[in-house]
Image (cartoon, rainbow, N blue to C red):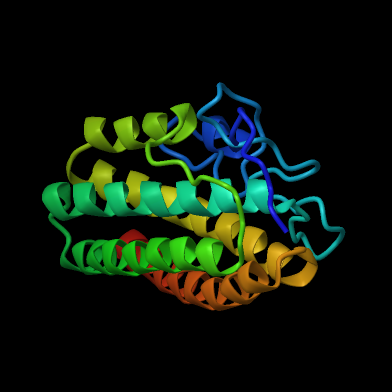
Length: 206
């Protein structure tokens, strides 16, 4: 089944909501309509809150939206991870950031392969939308312990949103190849979420 790429891309409202000290508000679960580079909103989904798939909080999204959000998440994670490797002075944070760059570079390649094999006519974004650019700017403006706090908070929010996105499409998506990819990616994202929760506890107690 082929899908035509439409203009607006999806942006998460929650990411902007956290823009006070640093926060993930939009993106993989990101509702907030934006310019053509932003990803279209998912009805009923807000960062940190259950999304549009009922009490389980899973997102029910169409294939185009899933592809755009998944790709946008990967783009941001790679760029944010590279920035953390440059700016963080915390060995644990840098180790986590290195893993994010590696894993999300890989999931980007897997997504591209799945689009080809699944005959999906959707072009993933290749640059950050306005919401994620703002999040990256928050990281660029932070330093020292404030940088680590900002980075970890964004990672917590972002991976919670990404997990709902991938689990939701794996459960209700309409492209078999992408559903398989979403299920595998959800496992990776869950591992990342567990790691960043431990990182958050360690840095807070430290």
